[in-house]
Image 1 (cartoon, one colour):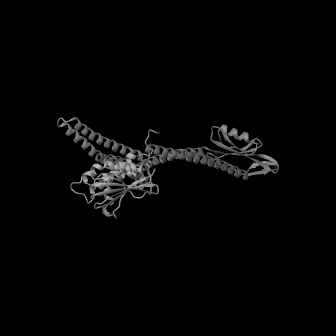
Image 2: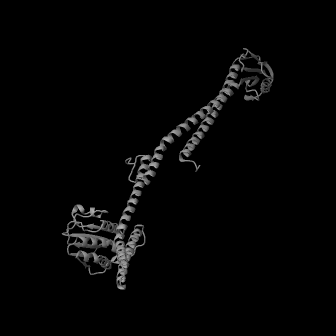
Image 3: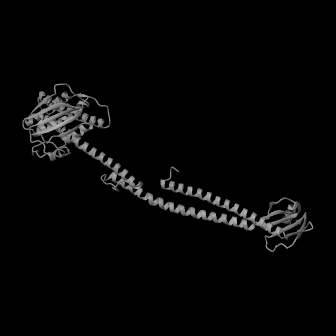
Amino acid sequence: MSRLGIRRRLLLAVVAAVAVALVGLVAGFNLILARTLDRDARNLVRTRAVAQLSSLRTDAGRLTVAEAPDDRAADAYVWVFAGTRALEHPRAAPAIDGAARSLAGGPARFFDVPASDTRLYAAPVSAGRRRLGTVVVGVSLAPYEETRKLALLASLVFGGVVLVLVAVASRWLLDASLRPVARMTRQAAEWSERDVEQRFALGPPHDELTELAATLDKLLERLAAGLRHERRFSAELSHELRTPLARMLAESELALRRDREPYEYRQALELVHGNAGQLARTVDALVAAARYEAGGVRTSADAHAVADGAVRACSGLAAECHVEIEIAGSGRPLRLGLDADLAERILQPIIENACRYGSRRIQVSIGRENATVVYSVEDDGPGVTPDEQERIFEPGVRGRAQTDGDAGAGLGLSLARRLARSADGDIVADPTASGGRFLIQLPSG
């Protein structure tokens, strides 16, 4: 059964259930019919015996027959016995006649003659307390047997026809009911491979089919969200790894163009080493973010040390942009409930953004609100307008204050927010500040 499809299993279940029900109905019908025919035969032969008794006369203690029995019918058997002597008897087969004679003088009872389809009924004839004789009446059971056999055959044929009709109707109904499910399954499989943005959109669930469509829509939405997440992760990863890789390639190509002094090679190796370290920290941060999203074990870090590390990583860009970065702490130690490298990778893109758009000065403040450590990164640049408050966190989107000389692909803020949210934090832009102001909220340790 497990190898059969659900359509065939359902069809077999329906046909089997109907077949069992039909067998029960046919058996019950024929059993009731047999009992009814048996009762009718008994009533008929008893009625005939009563009629014959009413035609008998007694004269001086002797039993006489006033009216000859009507034995013209093929199944009309009437015997009248005075003691064991037959006053009247029909033309019957020896087996039937012998059975009737054996009932003479006995009590009232029914007797079926074997192999003759004949039922006999013996009724005593009495006058007061004196037994005068016996009336035996017989009836042929052949018509009743024929009726029973014909009813059995007709009920079997009827049950078979009904079973075939039920099987055909069930097959059609199952095909019609499961055809949309098969079509939806094929469509969902095609969409999951080619276009995960397609949906069935059958509205709120109100039956099994629409409930299945809603479930498949949710499944496709999760697949689409996963694919979007992977694409965004790839874009963010390429953005984070592009700059240090480009620096390493440029420095190595420059060092290989001509022979250099040992100290120049040392300087080139130090630059390559520094960029390789940045690559390693970036990969570690992305791995830590993935581990956080998967529910991995979380560590803790010093909030001030994280800010110092992020500022040192942005010192080169700050020098190029001619801005100064100042860290203003709360004066008391604060612990973050996440890995130090991940926290630096969250904070660094915000400081880099401030370096690109600030004029002269950037201030990084550290504070605590309830169970959250809040970093505030402020610059004296043009700031963020209300309509840009959310758009600047989308991958590839940059603010209106950008210039043609600005570097970057507009993915830093998007990566920073995604990493912060993976650690149960968030990053928001404050459009009400006079310059640029970003608040980085991270869980405390």
